Length: 270
Length: 267
Ligand SMILES: Nc1ncnc2c1ncn2[C@@H]1O[C@H](COP(=O)(O)OP(=O)(O)OP(=O)(O)O)[C@@H](O)[C@H]1O
Ligand SMILES: [Mg+2]
Image 1 (spheres, protein in one colour):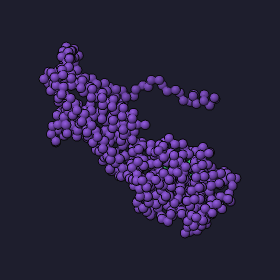
Image 2: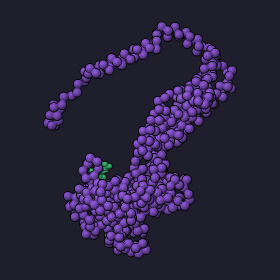
Image 3: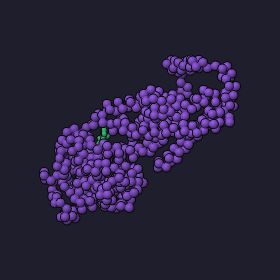
Image 4: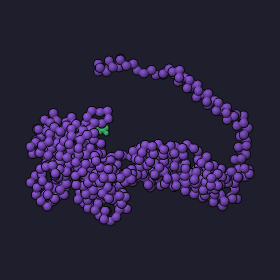
């Protein structure tokens, strides 16, 4: 008890409010300036927002009731959107797996390979998928193939990173046990690392599919296939009732994919 | 000892003495210092004869695990000579080293098994290095012969009924027995066991130690195990090697030692 009292006396409690340092103060000023100039930069004006309100009301009004006029083409475009998402995700996941092994610190054959592959994965992840779509439209032409390729690249960036992290976190004990028996690196990956990381792989893959479904809607806007182009045409022609049908269709697709993915997740991860 | 000798009549002949030619493992002047640390092993020498059971003792941090790992080059020793099953692991190329490792079963204190795979797949992994390759990844995809052999190995440790059970749903004692079955699947000639029963309750620990004794007697395996259980060392080992401060302090037949002498060693 006496000791504790002495200790308490020797170390005063920390101050409740710390006085900001000069540098900290400067950081706050810069952050604030950044926010203000951003609002100014986008021409944020409450007046225009208010004067736009009737427009918004009118558009939303014209959206109802949704028009069933082009139901068939919309359904086909929706199917194409999902096909792009699925094909792109599957391809991306398949390509991610070997890349992720090379990008896993303790499994990579060489540190140089590790850094090179990590770099590629980071590049794929940081460039937005819309940019990849523009690139592939230019390379292979308009249509869903370009979109699927853009999704593939985007998913390599996403899954490559998370697969590698899951493998780095996998328990080393079983891996060491197999290594001590003379198993090759490929065998250790297949028989110990992947089984351990599998729940995470499934999770990441399903999440990637959900993400891909949402982004494949957008990719259509740059001509990379799918329902995006339908939506754009309807909006450009002021056919808001048709547009609302498309929006509802997109909403349904996303919800169905998310529900299916949640169901699969429960089934596959135990 | 008598029982061991009798069992050996039908097993390959193996003299109990540790003359130069018959040692399954011979370590000479082995030293190891980890980067930035004190020497863990300094000039360690000992030998293990074929069919012999040796207990490796020593306080926490004495270097027992490091020594076992160095013998298989799971840790690279700094200096010294090793002769294991007739070859020098330090002189081998990667592929040859893997073939040598395949002949030695290594049982760790825990986390031996791949948790999400069934016991049978874990046993099958024993065939990975001795030529099984990818056919030994998962039992579902393995050829019938390998599968049958894996089942037999499970049966020998009394767990045939647990073939389809996931490894992470087995008890600690069952897990260790599956790890032993995997070593059998390896057709290992030698077993290293690093505190194999330290995380088991007394009954399960005894069961696993009995299993080791049985395998040594019937299959003529050579066994080196580490333990903090002095009675296990005295009861199950033919010889006791004890490390202190990275050096061999005791190397004697277990019948010449008793609990008192070993307690004195721990100080
Ligand atoms: N990979 C490593 N890097 C650095 N130091 C290590 C490493 N492995 C072991 N050591 C150190 O080497 C010493 C011996 O460790 P070792 O695990 O061989 O002891 P042990 O006899 O097996 O102990 P225990 O009875 O606790 O299992 C310890 O001081 C430990 O901190
Ligand atoms: Mg140890």
